[in-house]
Image 1 (tube, rainbow, N blue to C red):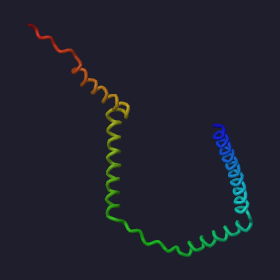
Image 2: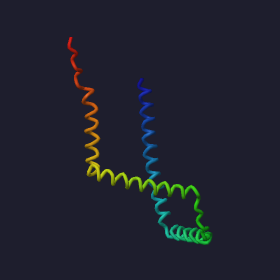
Image 3: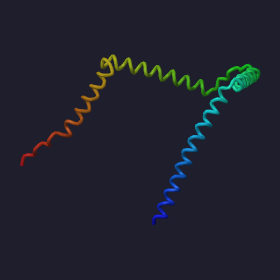
Image 4: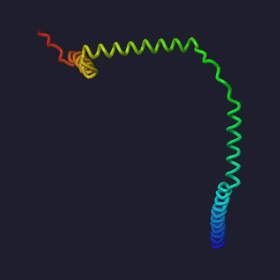
Length: 128
């Protein structure tokens, strides 16, 4: 039994050492990459590539064609205009009849209560 425990302990030690070595190597790699990214040569190269890409894109731009208005767009615009007019009319009606949205809500609640009241009332007793 003791030989198995000793083998397990050795394996655990090796795993722990590999974990420490991996963390150390990752830290060194991160530092090297950071230095390479900040090096003057890398910065100059990035600026040069940026200018080349921006210059290439600027040359390829063409004049935009005249906008084409589809029939669907016109129909959508008409629907939007009619919806706006309907909403304006509804708002005017609510304000003139009920004084505003709160008055409308109170009116609707009172009508709902009136409907429920007869249903919950006790049925009339039929004389025998």
